Image (cartoon, rainbow, N blue to C red; front, side, top):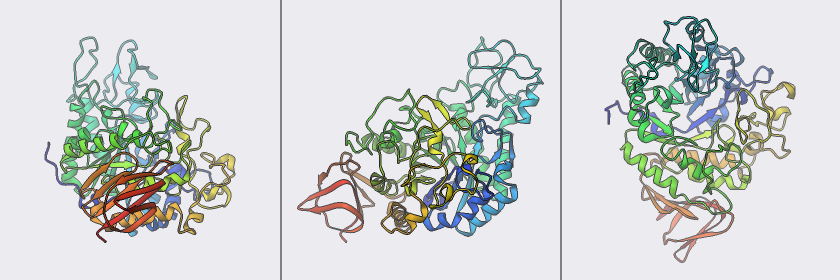
Length: 527
């Protein structure tokens, strides 16, 4: 494993909170969330206890992929505000002990980026991947005077930046090696972009499609080498900054140089099985290529925590303390926890697990109050990826209060970025703040417990006693956690006495732990 500077000490205590900026809070009434709106709502995050915020891309873009088609890496998109607004957000967040991470789209730009417009008219420009003649499979015809076609990285409007190919192919002479001029220029550009924003005051980046840089790189060896180079630079130039990867394979990404990787709904040899085996209930965002499975957090009780536990054990053994794995509740590409048949009563057990397991927790905005995945929305800025895969359902406006548009915006509803959840009983921050028995208060207490109890952090030991129903494990030889995500009662033979820290529907008597449906319990052993 390559030797890197140890991760900044603050990262081990991170509780991530992901904000989709266009849907969080609209300060100027135009129907789209903005940076000032986030700043105005920082007290909610500080009260909740999260300490690290990741913003989806907020840069200039034509928004054909909701900002992941970047047209200027160094300028804030006007719909979100200005550089001064971002500076104010970073400053005000810092006053509350909250760090800000930006989203770095490393593998492609928008076709509206000046780099691509220049490249489309200059056959000697190799910042992107061009086939000078014809149209190989997957390539898009040149929009400029340059003959041939270019390779996209996701949508057609997102041309792949050229980081070279890992292997030569005589049938494709246009393939360039990773040390060619174009790839070298792009690696330098990544450093310049990162340096610009880190000097601005942010604390690091979540990197989009981090595994996509070098093409025909089956083992990701050359892609990993790029991130290793960048990590060594980061360790020297910005030692307190962090890199989080959208890779979904911590055993590869963390040794390559990332401080943290997420378990995702894709990635790795099992195509995202660890995360999907927990949350994916066949509703919301569904990829037709996924193998059907019974997830663990489902009232039917047909799933198992074993796939997740085995993947976690394998990853952490490979990492050997060199970095972290993060477990999200959801994200902008994947269904919320409250989706399809999963209802609000099932969410406390999910958070009791997520916030006591030794992964770094990542809470997707609104999940702390149990916002729903909203089905049946129209395509919005490239949200639809398949017949059953509409990401818009996870991108609806944050629900702050009972006012118009759930307190998200004063704009007329027809001008909103997306419509709010139409349900008359939609949860709100205001209502749950007023109810100490609410999910929001539970999440706050669990975050506080995690942050004040080292055993619950990523360095604390975990001993799994049972991967069925109920899921039972011990943290740091001191704390027993019991989680029953199914509808029916479940029991496990275990004899111990302990002080209840957070309990709902779990009892221990006569050498047996009994958990009612959707019950959970956190106990201090011997207390």
